[in-house]
Length: 245
Ligand SMILES: O=C(O)CCC(=O)C(=O)O
Image 1: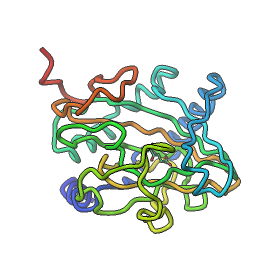
Image 2: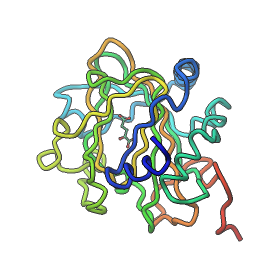
Image 3: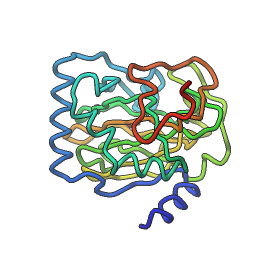
Image 4: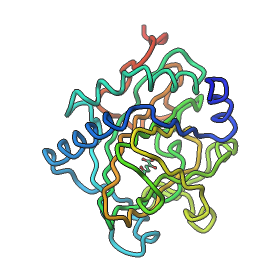
């Protein structure tokens, strides 16, 4: 795919899977790094209350925010032009600014699902340039609870969310099972606009699913409210911050 084709696909569908953005060897090393960070931190479980209804029982998720504060490997990846050049092209901006990062490990057999939602409900911005890059560090087939999207849903703009159980969309109107599964291989990166409706299923496989999510924005796109702060937010990943006084 040329850059113009990638941008056109993203603008039409609200997401883009870039195959092999990093190599399988790099992905394996990052996978080990994620599991080592989580072993050191003994993190809490961020499974949404509403996930239990989808999973039909208790599930587990292991995560940490601000991964680059725990291992320099993630700081290097966030600044890697293979990633930042795509993010810039998709946003139509020379400048890419960090919003936040998080590692997710969905444990084998009982990895928590994410009910359908727009990330915009969690941290609205004025110009809607915010995007997520989900780096896959191991394969994520459907049975591992891969991310699922509703292509084109970004064109509907911000939708009302249910606050109870984690700011999600009503499951009766937005069933997870009807969303398109985006199966990925280790090294693939899924780019998602923050208005694109997405979620993910239960990991029922025998292997953990390991990802790093980097949320970014155009620095000229300001938060609509003071609702989300993370360590390192505002760091420039590419280009400059033209708004800095
Ligand atoms: O990694 C996943 O399965 C989904 C994560 C997600 O939807 C989110 O963090 O907003």
